[in-house]
Length: 602
Image: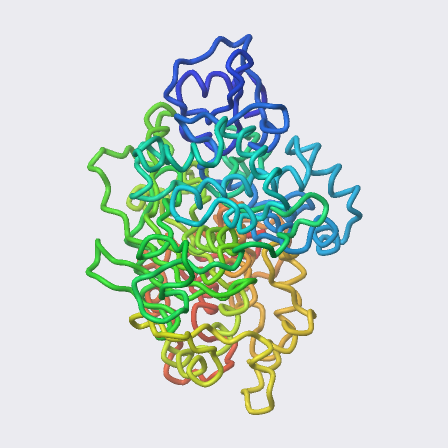
């Protein structure tokens, strides 16, 4: 969406497709909203548009209490972009500014702080400190509405440098004091999408904005992304001060004092902090829960309940401690008839969307924003299913597959290094479980089937570890291979492909899942086609930038071998460290199914 008049049309039609892509503010009321806000549409002369929630807040506008613009899904643009701004946004989402400050962000990006500030301000209307501030404020709102922490402790847990800064920020953004926000939640006031605090606080994905729609056709670009759950660092340094109760534990239903147990006073309600992780458009929940269930590593992950009502649970290793995350499988489609891909009118498709009901139990509340971000990556909640459907639905091979499974997602990873180890190790999940039992960190108290944190790369560099895994973990621990949230994806793929036991196919798979690239490039050995940039012919060239979603549609349709489609397990002759192991071998299956290579997926 390239101009303000087109944006105003989206506001008039309350088009939820653009929630998180841009924000509008009303000069006469001093508030800013998401495009789908149900309030009376303001006059065009009184409306201003912003590429990010942080930009609107910096201009002096406060968040609308009715539509909660800070709780929108993130923009899929940041999943596609590999430039400085795209990488910076992913780093900020993962809490780098919180932990390392703007200087640490600039160092990771390889640019000066001035250059990072200039680029972010030019595209998002706000610099890294303002973007972090927006996330910090939203985290504070979530903690106010879901925990009983004293306000003074909560302020430092959310990342504020002082109580005065906390109070001023909350009044400026939410037009109320922290005590008033907590009281409103207790009265069942507006929280999330009309729900009360008891049902969870709706959360978006970041405090950033976007400037385009990647490869969407027929809609052009958009210009923003909603403020979301997070903490943001203190001005300049990005870090919390360590005062008060920043490390308070959240309560849980399990025993002990780990993520599942009751911690210090001021804990959250039993079961952890309830959250609603918002997504846009249709969401193929059954398929993504199937995908995660057959790959769940015992001790680290588990899936409970029957299909259609499952709960995915896993442990998380975070910057300040550990946690346990739970996500419930949403109910099936509402029964609304869905037109075929590419034939959906804007007014009809703008009504889709929803959220995952989640719970987080953390040993340190400062990890809240990072934990939420990693769950969003794992469940691919910032995807744009409309853009994917329009692009893939134009291909004759994929058109019926897209129509059959609207909203199919490309699962990411909660921990990139963990997925890399599992991919190189190969074999069924029980093989990784044996590694976890030997090298992983035990929880203080088991929580159901969850007993361990997955070992870190540094834990797997000993001489007794098999060579392929040891070589990978040594490279990760030494920084020779970087797989953090804002890593240079092309550089990481090249470095991974040179390691023993990895190879180009496994590297491409890790680029797709661990690094969250929807526009994957995978050389298909034996396909008869070499990498040839963007100029190759065949269906794969028309799938850009959504090649990962095309791959998942082919998996689901059975156009790849059954073992690869569902379990991703290697054949019986595979051994640990084989480059052909697990899902990493699917690229050749795509070639066979489509009759073409996939060399042009990036």
